Image (cartoon, rainbow, N blue to C red; front, top):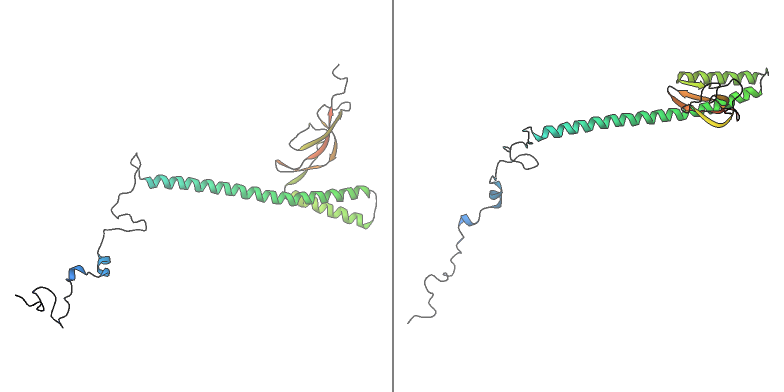
Amino acid sequence: MNDPKTPRAGRGRAPGTPATAPPDDDRQPDAAREAEPSGNWEGEGGAPSDAPAPAVAGGEPDYKDRWLRAEADLQNYRRRATREWEEARRGAEESVLLEMVAALDDLERALEAAAGAEQDWVRGVALVAQRMREYLARQGVTAIDPLGQPFDPAFQEALLEIESPEGTPEGSVVKVVQKGYRRGDRALRAARVVVGRPPAGGAA
């Protein structure tokens, strides 16, 4: 009969015996695992280096079509930006020129009121008005004098109609209320005019 205090073979260990370490294969360091290659990858997108370029149905690489579209979009953007910049520049210039035209109107009215006067200030005002006309001419601004000409809605604004004086064609400008100005082929300020119409009994 076995003594219950005697340790059985294969169970437990003798006092003072160190614990046996597990095999090295079961405890690989994490750094070694991370160092193992997982495939030949390159680039931020994680695409394999030997992956073929995407292609469209015609066999051409897809990136070429995308490049052509991007280039066309860029050209359209440049043209649109240039056009918008030109319009903004022209608008800013015309705003300043309109202010000068309004100031020139005041100077010309002052000269009309002082017609025949020989004071020095009258000559000074005339000189300033002349300098302003010269500057406007250098900027391509010219006055519109439509008196006796057919009415042109692109450069004239009709305020009212009256019966045409004898010998004046109908639809012609018979009076200029406010002088107009043009810059190139565009109206800087339309002339305000009175247009002649046929006499009331002319149709009979």
